Length: 236
Length: 236
DNA sequence: TCAATATATTTTCTCGAGATTTTTAAATTC
DNA sequence: GAATTTAAAAATCTCGAGAAAATATATTGA
Image 1: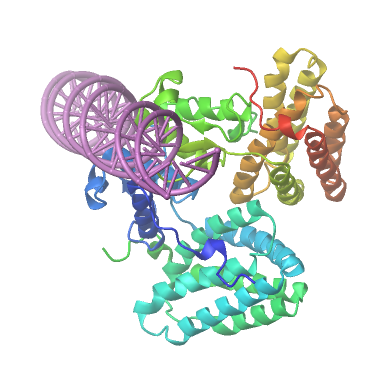
Image 2 (image 1 turned 30 degrees about the horizontal axis):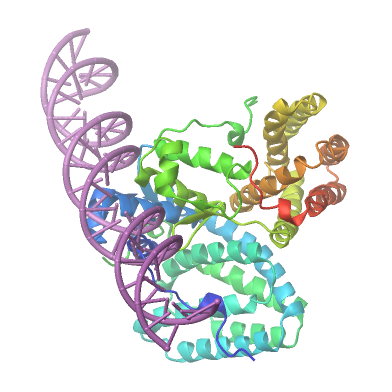
C-alpha cells in the first residue's frame, strides 16, 4: 500500500525565478498585502521581489490564470477587484462543483483514500487545537486546504478538481478578510468532523448537505464585513 | 431596448504584441497546426510570430490559463497533450456545467435574450446551409460558438461562464480532429433548432436533455478517431 | 472659473544579449 | 556490447535599456 500523501499535497519547490515571483505575488494577493484593485507597477515591484521586469511580467501573466490579477492592454496589471456579488457567485459555483466532486469521490474512494482522509483530518484537528495564537494560522490554512483536497481526491475528473482549486483560492482570499473581524467565528471543527464521518460512512447525501452548509457559512461571515473594509490592504 | 449583440460576441482587437502572439498561437493550437505534445521552442517560434523572445514567453504564459500550453520549470513549454480520457472528462464536466447554466439562463432570460438567441440561431443556420465548402468552416465555427454563448448568456454566474468558455475551447480542439474524418457527420442543424425551440418555450428540462445529448454526440464522433491520428499535426 | 490644448513625466511594452540549465553526442571504461 | 563519464551543443531563463503609450501637469483662451 502507498502510504505517502496524495500528489497534490506535496509542495514542489520553485525551479525558476518566474515561479518564485509567481508564488510570492500569489501569497501577497491572497493574504491581502496587495489590496484588491491595486495597480501593479512592474518597475516598482521588480525591486521588491528581486527579479527583472520581464520576469515579473511573466509571473503576473501566470496569475491571470488564477483570476488573481487582471490586465488591460497597454494599461498594465491590477490586483483582481473584490465584491460581495463576486463572492456569492464563487460560493454558489463552488457548492455545485464541490458537492458533485464529493459524491463521486465517496462513490469511488478506496482504502487508501479513507486513510488519507483520516490523516488529513487529524492534522487539521491538531492545528485547530492550538489555533488561538495567530502565528499558527498559516499552518491551519494549509491543513484546511489539504483536508478539502483529500475529500474530493478520489473524484476522477481532473477538470472538476482544477476548477475547484481556483475557486478555493479565490474563497480563501475572501475568507481571510473576515478572519480579522472574527478570529474564531464558528465551530468549524465540528463541521469538519461531521463531514469526515459522513464521508467515511459513504453517506453521500448527508456529506453533500454538510459541505454545502459549510461553504455557505463562510459566505455569511464575509457578508458581515463592512463594505469599506473589503478593499483595504492588510499589514505591510 | 438594446439591439447590439452581447458583449462577449464583440471581438476586441489586440492592443499589444503579446495579445497578438497569444491569439495567433491559440488559433494554431486549436486548429491543430501545432500538434498536441509538441515542444514550443521560444527561439524558433519568435521568428514565425515576429516577436521577441520575452514577448513570446509572455504569450505562452497566458495560454497556460486556457490549458492549451503546459510548462515544466527549466524545461520549456509544450502544447497540451490530448487523450480520449481527457476529452471524456471535458465532455462530462461540460454537460454538468452547461446544463446548469442553461437552466439558469432559461429561468432569467428576458426579451433581449430571446431576440439575441433567435439572431444567433439565424446566423448559424445561414452558415450551415453553405457549409459544404471548407472555406466557410471558420465562419461556422465562430457562429456555433456564439450560439452556445448566447444560450447561456442570461445565466448570472460569471464563474460558470468563465469555466465553460475554457471547456468549449478545449472541446473545439478535439472536435476539429474529427471534422477531417467526417465532414458532415450528423444533423447538427436539427439539434440546434430543437435546442432553440425548447429554450424559447422555457422548457428547461427538455432543453437540458437536448443539450446533454448534443455535447455527448460530439464525444462519440471523436471517439471514432484512430488513436494514432489523435496526435497528428494538420496543415503547415 | 472652467474647458481644451500642449507639454512633461511616468509607466508599459518590447527587444537583444548574456548566464544557467538541459539535452544531445561522443568518448571512455568495464 | 552496455553503461557510465565527459564534452559539446542547444535551449531556457534572466536582465537592462530603448521605443511607444498613457497619465499627470502646465499652459492658454474664453
